[in-house]
Length: 290
Image 1 (cartoon, helix red, strand yellow):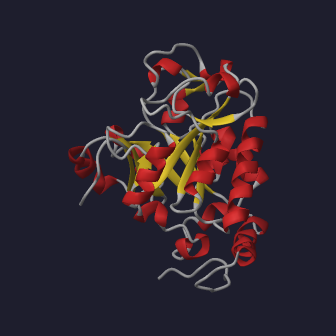
Image 2 (image 1 turned 45 degrees about the vertical axis):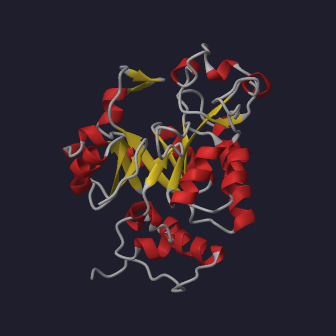
């Protein structure tokens, strides 16, 4: 086995202080990007769940489960899956769990843009026939309560700072309450979001997301560069999440042994196709088996 670059404190039940100290050794020696390449990476980060536990997209483990309804999160927990939760910021700076900017993409009877609404206005809308509401991030975290690991996906193609600070604040309260520092990861398409999050809190596992883009620009960033992972270095990301339909691809495989997550897997057949090229998947609408 390759020798560790930096000796770490061994402890099967790593406290946060020892966990933090181990990461600080890489930060202080300016070798943070070598951390994810260490043979004992998962022992340092205590986050093996990212490659070992199927990740449900928005808690939707079947087509009957509505994306990002609290009942869907509960079902994902019951079925033993991790959960990927997309979050966005409203007009009044509230952070909510919703997967699209356009409301009609999720709510067929409603039109308009999510970020133009206040939380009060959003709460007037129903997600499903059971009259469930779009949860805030804090409501989602209270519901999940460290019963399963989570990935918080930050959707931001605008100014960096305010949104990220609010998300990180909620995450910090959550991990402090449940002592679950290794059970939360953050993910984003925006490399500057991950760069900012690293600067504020480098102890949270980071995942850079990319793949298929329908537009030429993501905010002010050319999607051609995002697709080719040109900004990967500034994110200090531990993992790459890439559209399953595009795997394998050289722009991803060249970063191995960095862990790869196949995104948007919607059938068992697609899972079997992508499994040789990914360490895990984010799935929806079915229950993967292998």
